[in-house]
Amino acid sequence: MSALDNSGSFLARNKTLVSIAATVAGISAVGALYYYSQQGPTPSPEDSTASKKKNKKKKKSKPEDSKDTSAAPASPASSKIYPVGKDGLPDLSEATISNLTADQKSEWALALKEDGNTEYKAKNYKEAVAFYSAALKLKVDPVFYSNRSACYAALDDHENVVKDTTEAIKLKPDYTKCLLRRATSYEILEQYPDAMFDLTALTIYGGFSNKSVEQVLERVLKKHSVRIVEQNIKTRVLDLPSASTTGSFFGAFVTESNPEGISEESTGNDKLLFDAIAKINSNTPEGYEEADKLIAEAVSGYDAEGLKADSDNAAKASIAYEYAATFKFLKNDPLSAAVDIGKAVSLKPRSRTYVIRALINADKSSYEDARNDFASAAKMDSNAGDAYYHLGQLFYLTNELDKAQENFEKAKKANPQNVYAYVQSACITYKNGDIKEAEDKFTEAKLKFPTSPEIPNYYGEVLSDRGDIQAALKQFETAARLQKALPNYSVGALPLVNKASLISRENFNKLDEAEELLVEACKLDPKSELARISLAQLKLQKEQVDEAIVLFEESSNLARTIEEKVQATSFAEATKMQKRIKADPILSEKIAEVMRQSMMAAGVAN
Image (cartoon, rainbow, N blue to C red; front, side, top):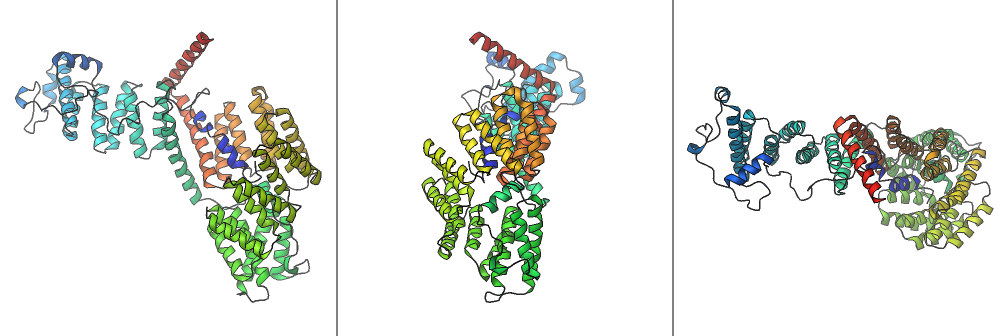
């Protein structure tokens, strides 16, 4: 509900989209993963249906699911029906094989497979490989490939596991044991998309009936997405977030124009600092970009002066470093931000300096350090609205709602112009279950800030949460209209995104209208990752898969936190998997079959 957590909360609410996108025709990607949790990475060899029957008659080695797991003694070489070398392993020449009848080949192949099973149970994996390989010379059988792949898995030879399971799957596409084994090896080899494909195929062949695959598929998807994000971060260009996010951040502080007496008439570094603050107060995308550059120039200039804590310009330089740290924090460069805020503290810090450092510490989960910084800020200025508001945010994030509410109320008194303090106070009241008081607080805020888009937008979220859809839509429309009338950014594209998400969820026939709103939102705020990820989700509903992938990837690049980047990338990669599954004729037909069966079952049930 807060002004600063909308992107994250959207992703949390729509986490299942990762699974949905990984399949086709709206069927969930989480389904059957047979005996994954029970079966280790080196499953036992198996018998084909025919050989099981023959084994039963001859009372030979038991199949892998037998309770008797003891290794049977190897048969002496003299009793073998096939040639054996000095090492006791099969010795089949091409000449020998060419002289065999078809029945003899089948008989020898079965004997070789059974002896291979015996060696496997004795954990003689290399010897078992020799027997299965000899069997394959006589007869191409998916079971022989499967059993040999189990040996390779036991030997950690995952390249060969992939080769053999692939051959088995070519012969038997629904070979779930091989799909599972290959998926495991693909994951170990860090070939994550291929592992995801096999896991998704398992769910399809299982009729989407076993939810245990969800954890496995999500784990592999996350590994894959994290790796992509890490690679992208190495080459990323640090940039400010959307204007609405930046505006929300600065809007929660007391507005200043001429700290330490700087003015239009100031010169040098002081003038750069004055102009930067004026650009920030303009609250426009261009203004924030220019302010960032001006602050960097001012900091460079103050650096050149070699200032100390007792220097005349120490206080002004400290403010410049403070703003520099703020911009770097917003660009998700916490290390550089920490360096600049450290310089600000070493010169002549003010209450706001400690607030910024508290936010940097909180962002890296150093909550105790953050609380200490907030205490320092309040000690310097007992009426520090900035400190109270952001301390309230910290308590809100740690779910200490009573303490959060207490600080938001203090922030309202200390800085009556902080609209976000009013919003947060009302939202917490609603979250605590006092709907009437929450409505009164929103009414109070509307009267105090009649042109503010923030109030109707967040009130609309509350109404939506309560299920009052029509009232929520009216609030979002009001918020969008107020934002459009403003000369600068406030909530930006958020009301449009909220309205679009609501109508698309409530009425499938209004997807085109929702799409128009989201396209408008992307134009209004080109850096809004929330607008893009919402539009991507809608594109997915309309089966415009390629466009959805591009939007998910753009959203990942725009997202500020690593978690949000990984989530958006997960959506993109899951959607790519959807395309790959659709392109497979066998899996597509299986999905159609599952759907037909589901519809028939539903018809019978009705």
